[in-house]
Length: 359
Ligand code: GTP
Ligand code: IMP
Ligand code: MG
Image (cartoon, rainbow, N blue to C red; front, side, top):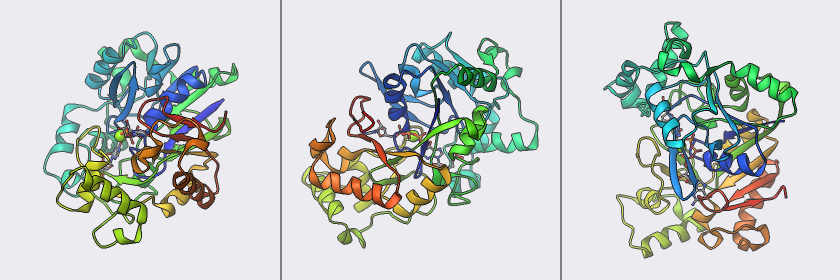
């Protein structure tokens, strides 16, 4: 059975944490990374340690799972080997022979003073220049890199065989729908589509093999890098959102100060990029984008994270009925508007800070 996890807004929704929970809870046999490449930063807590992973699937926390990286994902060999060491996953992590390779020159170009950095605000990880080169058909592939030899496999063969044998497979995508090259806020997007169908292509399975698509949203919207953000909270509009007035009051009571309201909210909510350490802008839950994203992704169910950040009384809650009334109303409204069942709610960064409504 195949489940795909994708981001429903602008990335950083907490996919890493959700994957780490499901990998253990659902006895997943194979966790496979889809998405663009090491521009992603997935945060996961494991044995009291925080990991900011850019290459290795967050499902590594299930020590009996096989870990794979699909052909659509760009590999930075140095970063990949570092993470293999950090996560101690050698022997159970493999990458597709056709993964494109990010070289130093791609990173240099992404970090230099070009429109990528200045206007798009890329992560500087080299993904855009490498994908451009892939389209130009001059990129190196993983099979050409001697240091990667012992990790090479054929990911589509592995996964499709596992499906035949009734195994459970989790596909971990990266970024979010609003950053899709096709459907996002072009040109302020990443270098590839980021929807569930792309994730299936990334790892080499056909659409008929996918059983579940879980779209992950944060309880509010964040965006790092340049580009429009319709739901951004400002001095002018905060009066319209009582919940956010409460959040701001709480931040001010804690002595948090900033250049403007959004700066204060980013600090209070601890919204800093995992890869680039840039501030993430904060917005109310972008319902229009969420609905459109659930539609294009073919969401079978949805997950909402960071409930505790705007409803601190919900921190670490593990049963739905123990959430505050205002939090339950907030969640039920999202479910009703999107028209897809909410099955997972996250109430803290640790993998067991979760309400699993499937149980
Ligand atoms: P990308 O692939 O980069 O889009 O990342 P991601 O979706 O895996 O999210 P990322 O880890 O970058 O950001 C999510 C942040 O929220 C991390 O710091 C997580 O530890 C944290 N987080 C996730 N879920 C929760 C939650 O329910 N509550 C709290 N307080 N923090 C959470
Ligand atoms: P690139 O993917 O590095 O080319 O960056 C393009 C845009 O996508 C920039 O606005 C980045 O901030 C954003 N972006 C890329 N990857 C992520 C991610 O994993 N989380 C959030 N934003 C991302
Ligand atoms: Mg991230």
